[in-house]
Length: 471
Ligand code: ATP
Image (tube, rainbow, N blue to C red):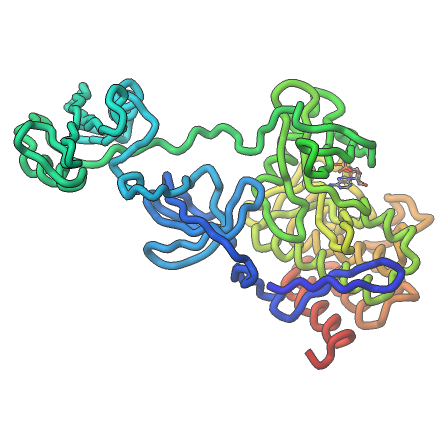
């Protein structure tokens, strides 16, 4: 995927996408010079199109690190590429034994006992580990019903190894091959390599609060304040600080959504401090703040910029649509703007994973009515198509430089007008083409509204046609 950043006069740069962006692939950046070899510690099943399913023992080359994930290319089995959680892999050392499924590094006799006696291991499970008492030598640990037997593997000065004097082998593989067949010698069969449980689900995002310094308050929302800050004195970050301890559950939902969702047009979670109070959610810093404020002060923005912003948000929403996640609060105030006028969708406090592609709620207390589709505002029925309605309102905000929709109407009056068929008028700086997209988004029946994928394709082609007709 090529994302080009063009510098414009008056200091504003804007994001531009080439046609390839409509169907992004995970092809690595050809300028990416280095990679390292890693082995997979345990099976991981991809949860989204950009993740890669891997099995224990697969070899990966790592193309880049991205938060708690790595972009990896599989070298064994089916070659493929995608994101894998960083704690499922470990660097492969030069020593081939480290890549063997039966070798477990860094454990002693007690840990070997614990692992072999824990499910799913059973009679005949075995492992090789480094000897605790003899540096450079190994031990074989084998489960025999409810006990574990440990055998020292001796090393001769020439490098050959053995369990019993006189029976030497040049490698651990050959030693194991021999005792797999001649297991009666050690009175315990070698049936299958020890299976290690998944890495402990210690949260890879959790960091100590002391790693973060707060610099200046940037804003305030329902849950708490947002501060610009620094992570370990080096990385500029945004830190959302929970206001009250009793909001922990709501905050947790936002955190879960941020952890699950990963896309270039979605705000990226960097860390969490949830041990003790107050809870921090640490995300990438978007220096220009929320889009609503930016539009209000951004009169120098041209239609070109406005269209670019619309394309980026459609791109991010297409990802949410694919993930069956409904945002429920799509509005310019919840889009954050970075230095290059790159826009990212934020505020996943209300986002929900859809079952049956519909989310129903019984309460309507916190509904942003003027952005909400009628079926959601009246019956609390949310779907990707109710987000499409909100996207139409978002377009209106963008092309009016942040004007409030239905100005002068109360929420109640807005719903009444909408159900009678009233729709917002075409903003002056908006072409009939873009306005017709808004009207499509505001179709009364959700099923008549376009999908985000088709909105994205339409907007991208308008953009290309207007600004790059020969590309
Ligand atoms: P909520 O309904 O969840 O309280 P909100 O959008 O009102 O949502 P926050 O998400 O708490 O509030 O954000 C408040 C403001 O802080 C935003 O409008 C924005 O200006 C600023 N902000 C939030 N996150 C960032 C960030 N990552 N980078 C820069 N500014 C941010």
